[in-house]
Length: 252
Image (cartoon, rainbow, N blue to C red):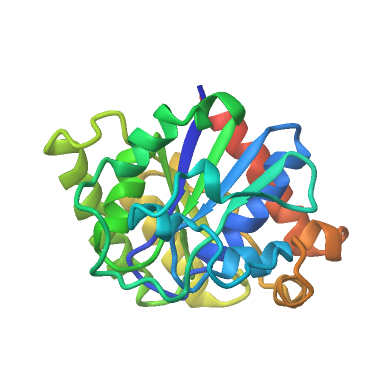
């Protein structure tokens, strides 16, 4: 039975997709069979893995429209043990079949849990059926955040959504895995203060070491590669590798 990790934050621009792509790649490098599902209609996961999506190809969003199965949208990436179900940038967030358990049921009924060890869900920042499907399908939640003054509000909004999902019985098994600072620079006072505030609010045991600010991440995306493949000795490659190992060790 695969473990399902949702990478999410209610605030945009928090490094969700960069983290989803690079963590998925690092988990695959650790020997895990990984499926990355891109629920964000920006469709950047395919770009980050160098996967070309032809017009009209099956996607996770056409699955929500009832046009194909999840398995029908599955694509291999160039990286061993890492597969992708891509997004449709033309998907209307107000469309799709009703129900918050469509993704969860399909992952089970189509045997996706049997074919993979970890399923990583990249999510849109909007509070809609796509985010709710991700939360209802997941076992653990990873929250990337940029350590500036708006980070706390995004985290608080997400915490309210998680409480609603669990308390209403939509997914009673959902648990917070941790918070991941991204684009951080510990020489900056505000970054240190925000990270300390998150640690104090949710517990230092919920705080991952973080991803240092590194232009190599942007360069890697432009080249359609995880940062490990673009600049294996960079700060970001080291940090994402450490994060993947921490996730495996924490997720018992």
